[in-house]
Amino acid sequence: MQTNLTLSEDEMWQAFTNKDAAYDGRFFVAVRTTGIYCRPSCPAKPARKNVAFFADCDSAEAAGYRACKRCHPRELLLPAEALAQDTVRWIEQHGHARLSELGSAMNVSPFHLQRTFKRVMGLSPLEYAKSLRVQRLKTALRGPDAQPTRSTDAIYEAGFNTASRAYEQLDAIGMTPSAYQKGGRGMAIAYGLVDCSLGRMLIAGTPRGLCAVYFGNDDAELERELRDEYPAAHIERHSEGTWMTWAQAIAQYLLGAQPYHSLQKLPLDVQGTAFQARVWQALRQIPPGQTRSYADIAQAIGQPSATRAVANACGANRVGLVIPCHRVVRENGDTGGYRWGIARKEALLVAEHR
Ligand SMILES: [Zn+2]
Image 1 (cartoon, rainbow, N blue to C red):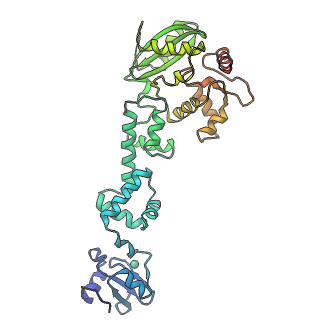
Image 2 (image 1 turned 180 degrees about the vertical axis):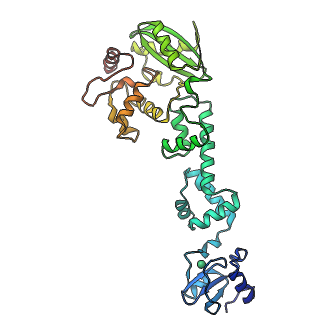
């Protein structure tokens, strides 16, 4: 019999027979016929005459036994709290958690991790990771920064691998990024109309930033376009306000009096699907004077087969010029479509090329 054992053999055998987890870590049971050693709670049940008891893993292994693959006796060396804490830290850093991945990161079996974590934290590692993501996503979506990429950034900051997974998660809590402010519900939009080198320009915004920049020839048509786009919003025409500052920046850029950088600094308040937001963000990376194909953008957002969806997202852009959808052209070099007319697109491309 081994030294350092404080329990009687009968008590240990009894604990082993009862699979009593309360004894886990206090002794180990080795099975001579299999050469394997276990924790007391292991479901393996050999005959009493074949077992030997050890005080710790090291002495069992020194005697030539291997750790059981069912009950992973070595994992008892990690105190439950420390393991749970390390796991929390890992999830917070990596943002996602597959149980097998977590297990190997923590160097314990997925089963042990699951059980220990749940005992300490009151929920499973996956449930914890999920609640953390949802919490971060909600915070980010409701945050004060209004950027066109807001949904996407939020989703990625919240640790989702793909937008589709984010949607699944959000569906589960009754919300999607695009439905978050559907039809502009809750938005207070002020707009104005001015002349510019492309004709008439409608500029609309909320207190958070630009939500529409349209080009056309007819004020009434442009106003209708705005109301169609934001049917649930409170919309008012203003003779002055922040929109004028934005309009000025755009007009100046069109005249070549300001670098594109000045438009990139304008605040945006644009809602869209996560996919649209990714496309719009990619558009903003195209320097003036250059063009990309729809396939290039699809590639840039990591969805090379989504060329058609990219074209749709470009077409759904409601902040002309500031989100430069005009810099996306057909693969074969054709100008391609433009929400505000091909002539305007060509004029913009020519002007920016100079
Ligand atoms: Zn075992």
